[in-house]
Length: 394
Length: 53
Ligand SMILES: [Fe+2]
Ligand SMILES: [Fe+2]
Ligand SMILES: [Zn+2]
Image (tube, rainbow over all chains, first blue to last red; front, side, top):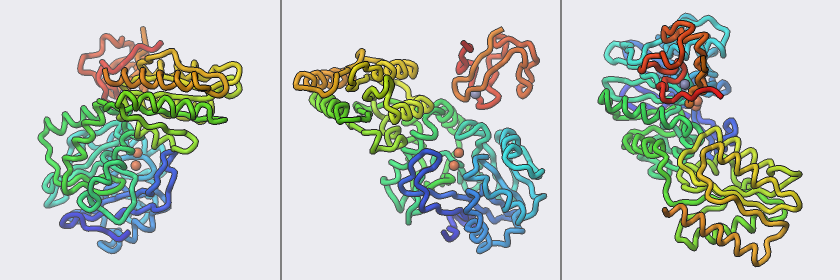
């Protein structure tokens, strides 16, 4: 990527990771970007770095604008290594004594990643740093995405550098929201569902702070994906909506299958839901990535989970998904379980207690069918689906 | 004295230790924390804590 001037004297000098397809267990079908920002004022500041292997791209981009040794300050909004991995080589290049501005927790966490004794300058929430003509202000945003996370706001230009917040794992020819249009929203939604959903309460609190302080944004620059310059309000509104976890009338049927019996049940259940005029989507965990399923969970009202019983237990892909979903703490969900079994049939019961642990409202003890569903079994599945459909409508 | 867990980040408030970050001295019960006390890790309020089982 070449550096992109996003506003007068402000550049995205980050890197594009076109080929990453697995970002710590999150499927990145389009790759991602590690955005880093250079502001050239009386002082020159670098906001965030990139993942370690992309240092060369970063330094080349910076060099096209200024001699990297002229950088006066580094801001670390977030300790995670997709943003800090390039820090050791950056500091080596620009001068090990240059100040690194970060949150108080950021200082602690960076020191647990890197042994260098850098010149950390921990900032207060709301603290400022003058660049000469322009001013940076720091906003603590704990848990968005880690305890160390903060945002940096360029006061005069009303530009927010939001670290992981408002990001999307998306690498493409487009660099701004107006170039990509609504097609970016699914990537932003997937990012929220898989990274931030469990911190919904913090997101809502942040939005209150933004309103309280009357902060306005001409541009929101996340560290992943495109920059919001045409309509930053769109992503702010979407974050409020997603955080509120008010799901629509949608049912998700998530399952795996051994000899297609549980799959057949899933399809019949979906048919029953449809008959109630409710939107339904079956997703087979052997074909759909857990992070894509999670994106659908976010705005589903009911999540119906099916598993065959394998050796007296739940099928491994289903356990994987349950573990993943549990951590992301979806709220206000209706749950139901089903599955085919041979002789013992434990799976449905195990899943049911898992979902109860996640505070799902269970609407049925669960539907189990021995071996292959016959005509009567198919009808039971359709009835089961209708029951779920009705529950979603009320 | 009971320990309390933050629902947001998993931090555990242990009354034996108190919370040095927020100037809470060791031996302070969770109930005696001020109403505006916040989780030292994620900034959650007291309402976001649950008694440890
Ligand atoms: Fe992160
Ligand atoms: Fe990140
Ligand atoms: Zn906490």
